[in-house]
Image 1 (spheres, rainbow, N blue to C red):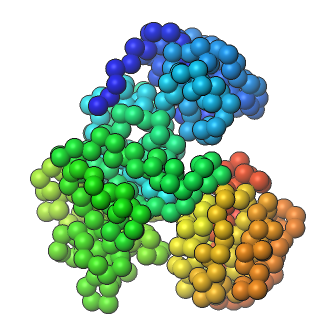
Image 2: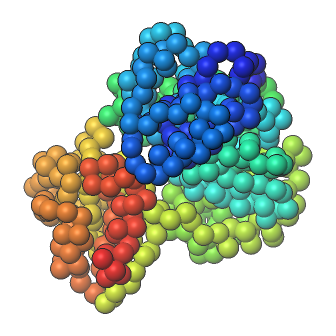
Image 3: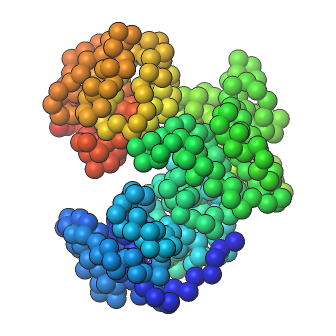
Length: 459
C-alpha cells in the first residue's frame, strides 16, 4: 500500500524543524533527497539543529519560510507541530504539491515494518505505551513511536528495524499518511476536539476514520464498543473487529465478573481492577484495548496462552506522565496532574475518576468546545472550580450559576496558590484543563511540570 516515492526527483521541502522535522530531514538525505528545510523560529535550539542539518547537506532556513520555493517543491513534508492551515502548507496545496507526514516518509523507508496503529481522541498515548510494554513482556523487540514523542523517522534511522512498533497517530498525521495500513489498528474513542483547526466535528472524525482507509478482509481492528461514534465509523469497515467495553456489555474484552471488578479477555479473567495500577474507568478501557491489540498482532492468538506474563506486565505498568498522575500529597491534599486533558471529554473523564472532594483547575487556550458538558461531573465531584487563562471568561460563562467557579487573574503560579488556599485535608487538587496550553506554555508537558513543581513547593 506504500506509494513509490522517487526521493531524487526534484526538491523535498520539510516544514518545521522540531524533533520530527530534524529526523525526517536526516532520513531524506540518507534516501538521496535534495532537501530544503525551514522553521519560523529563531530559537537557539532550532538554530543548532539547522547547523547540524546543513552539515549533512540540507539547505536550511530559520526565522521564516520561502513560500515560493516550497510551492515549487516536488513534495512537502509537514512536521506534526505545524497547523494544517499554516501558510507554507496552504501554499503548497494550492500549487498542487503533495503534502505528506513525517510518518509517511518513515513508512516508505521501512516497507516491511510491522506496526500497531493507535488513534482516537483520548487515551491513545497510554494505549500506545501499553501495547509496546505488553509486546516487550512477551519477548518481542517493540518500541513506541509517532505522536507519543519518538518520531517514526528516528526509528527508521536505527541500524536495525524493531520487530514491532506501537505507532500513535493524530488526526493530522492520518490526513497526510496515505499509505497507512497497520497489522492492527486501534480506535480508542471519539469526541469533539481540535475545533479550532477543523471546520466541523465531522471533518475531524473523517480524518480519524482514515485509519481504516486500506481495510481489507484480513485486517484486524480493535474498537470501543461503548463509543457510539467509533461504532458508527467502524460499522462497515472490512476485516476482523475485536471490541472492548467497560459499561457491562459483553465484548471480546470487558469489565465484568463479580461487582464488575474483573478484566475479562476472551471469556477468561486476566486480572482484577484492583491489580491495575491506573486510575479511572478510561484506563481500564485503555488496558483492555492494548491487550486486544497485542492479541490481534499474533495471527494465531497464541499470546493468550501466556496470560500470566501479560497480567504481570499490566501490574507493573507505569502510565506516561501528565495523565492522572499523582504528583504530591501535602498536608493531606492530593495533587493530581492531568495536563494531557486538553479537551472537554478528557477533562470529564478525569473529574469522574476523583474519589475525593476536588478543587478543579480549568483553563488555557479555548479549542472551540462548550464547557457545559462538565457541569454534571463537577456537581458530583468538585467543591470549587478555578478558571484561568484565555478561556477563563468562557468557562465562567458556561458554568456560572451551577458550579462554584472563580476566575483567577494573573499567571499559573497564582492559580496554584489559590487552589492551595481553598484545599482542605482530604481534598484533591486536579489539573484537568480541557484546553490547550499555548496561552501560557510551550506544550502540555511544560504546563504539567509547572503544576507538579508548584504542588511540591519547588517554584
